[in-house]
Length: 136
Image 1 (cartoon, rainbow, N blue to C red):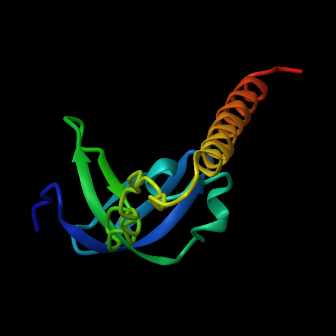
Image 2: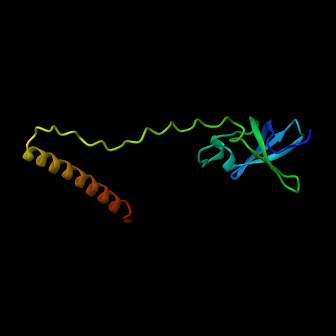
Image 3: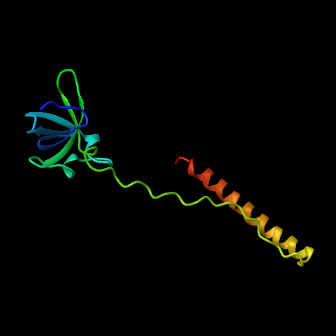
């Protein structure tokens, strides 16, 4: 069988190094390597937490160089991880309706309360931004 990039094959882990795992592909009769960055969709600190020697794995051929070295991926052979949930609909400003029969003083009090709330939110955001970049 000829190896084609993108082919998904079954293999067996024959060796583990700190930089990746060596996988024998019985259908082809050759071995390839899965780099540690191609083991899982998350950060892999210790490869032994994800694969063991003699473990059967599904791998995808992601490269074959001129010297015949086969690059494999376990994470690309698996189904794509669930996508993020869709973002909620954007929130638009809708002005509060003020009854026409309210007095000027009531409207002024409402305006002052809204202005203070907005100013407070802006100050809070600026304070958080200012504190987030401090180094200790």
